Image (cartoon, rainbow, N blue to C red; front, side):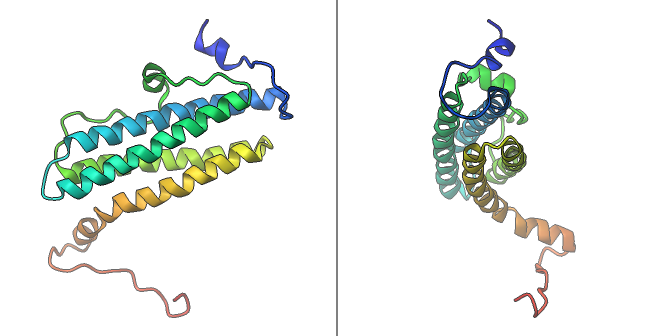
Length: 190
């Protein structure tokens, strides 16, 4: 049976979400499952191969990211099956259905790993926000809530990754390696 046929097939359930909506939600969740699995393995790739002066802290950070993503893999897959769908959780399914670009296997430098992961976390975060809106439109507030939960953590992790890069980016923008400038916040906003 092809993935197309099985992705639109539901097994019997008493859940009160219409089948037409559930098919759309399951397809979206399977795309999320693929991306989450892919992102987890990319974080592990960085964890195993990072080198440089920040090795230890990045090694731990990348492992923590992968561990959190592992939890989300299970939550997403279980939501798929709760809706009467089939979870496509194999490595091959993830590789063929992920929205993320391939991770370069020869990266060693910590900053390069951080940049690669930040780029991918940003893509993934955007996907999650779009999925929140889509599942909300389909009146599946439970799945929208699941996406919101994941989105909050992913945004926080993107912040953690970007914090490693921002000083260098600010220095480059200012054309001065000796100082950094921050955006002045108006007194009324403070």
